[in-house]
Length: 165
Length: 165
DNA sequence: GGGAAGTAGTTGTGTACGCAACTATATCAG
DNA sequence: CTGATATAGTTGCGTACACAACTACTTCCC
Image (spheres, rainbow over the protein chains, first blue to last red):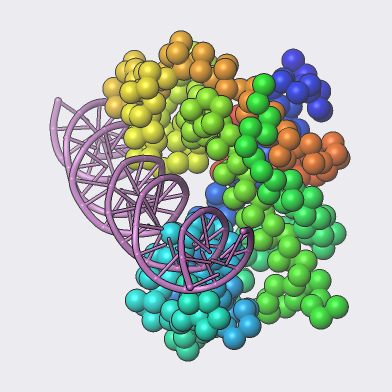
């Protein structure tokens, strides 16, 4: 039952395909769990909060519109609303009105948020490097980045019944 | 280039590192979301249920111990308990006592569960191929699989059984 | 044998999330 | 200007999950 490298469309996945696909799932799960635990232990900061702080800190004026931020941290809008609520309660962010569009609002980095980020960043960067990046050579990193580029547009495409019988 | 390929330990991630790392997060998020939506739309089956069905169907006797299954589908034990509860209520699985160890129990595939899996499998395999695998050459798949192997710690139980997705 | 320690699984509880419905504002067509 | 439609964000609600505490059993060691 040697599986070909690339079986026909409706055949089971080959070991090769399986390794590439399930490996992605496992690596993601393991990494996110470890990074979150690490950050939480060292700074009491969930990974989701850190993620928001990083995004906002890179934005011009250190503030971002909610929808933009939601896309950036891979959350639904309602999910982001509550995440920003929690972070605002912790003093890490502030909600600011948008001058141009009265519907919108900004999530603005507070000094406390910036301080917290600066404190946590080295921890997180070290962990990402240790658990993931250092495993690879520069060439491999470049290759990975290139592969993701190719997948992302495709996965963005409208998924409605993309492949039904 | 402003950023070196590999900055020092506590410096910000280079574009290269960032692409490899955030790309993984984005690809995972988009893929899982699309695959779940696809499977749910076509067969009313959440991806988590499908995942369990696949694992159990490949186990000897089409049954698996709960803890083994929890590892396989990347869930906590309590999470798996309730997932199996839901699937049992849907008739996809049955809980069976373990003869050797009265503490343990098996999740056993029912005929209905097997039928449901057989029905959903082509849909899912096609989607995984379309959204992910077909993006890559055989060499790239092999490389990916190899990279994952290096990232995953030895805790990864290598069940050599060639299971499909 | 009998208690200590370990393991399998479930249950109590809290939390983070998504979807759908909602409000409020913006934009566009006539 | 006015009504139709679209967009930004929030809220109600249900769900899936993790952690910790628990029960029940097993295993180990004297």
